[in-house]
Length: 382
Image (cartoon, rainbow, N blue to C red; front, top):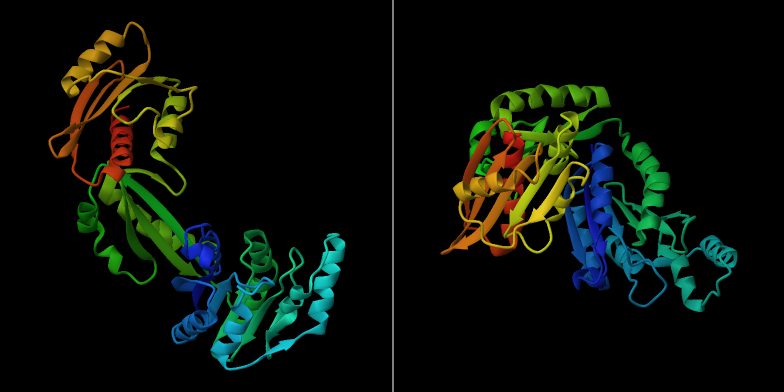
């Protein structure tokens, strides 16, 4: 099975002027094809630096995919850089020039002389016609390595990957396996504690288990490689069952589920509505709080400092006549010395619960941490 690397090319990427979405798309696509991605890098529009990056990648990977730098301007150096990386010259392809001119004619756009640059490819390269853009892609196969250069325009890159590159890779490397990923979401427990519980599983080869820490939640990622989707699902399910037994209520969902969606689904299934009294998380609810549909949750800001968690319960008692028959939850995040204190309370109609949590991390993470901790508290006590 080949190993791949991705090289995103463009000084505008390094300057932060545009976001590199191509690498994420390619990473997911390669994973689905069963191709291991070991590294992704970013380099500016400099021929020698690009060539050096490609040569380094060739020592580690069989498949190197570059994106960007295939335009007609001076700062589009990918063709020349690939040629330098494998020690060949570039050569003119008349048939590509005809395709480019025909493309411009169909688009009713004027063509300039510098567009001819796009018809030059490294000597021996396999041209890939770009049916949705003007920049042809190409493949250089050295025997040990395959270098695939794609345009940086996401729409063009995605079309070429699905319609040209994947069929080529399947045939070139006789790829018959797939890689599937299954993510288990947890909240209310630390990364170190989860590592203590599932650390032995993190040493497995197939499936593999890894942890991803976010502010207020930890994800457990299971990745399986198999010949068929069904075989991969079997490998994943056996491991997921062990993790579910070990972590129990600390797990709130899987894959695309969020804390907000889990709470919303529970409220809908039980035909209940919730009022969320909130203070200290900013003027607007966090996006994940706002993701709970208004049909099941109403967010009511509390402008004044409501006090600790016991006082939140008193506040809920005061508001009960106004929100009769509804679940009432209250959240207050307030600074205290060097930390933040998150006070929580909930009244479901049949039970009351309150708690406090302390946060001493970076201020930029405080809002997301408070939101996730609050949602997890609500989830556990609904």
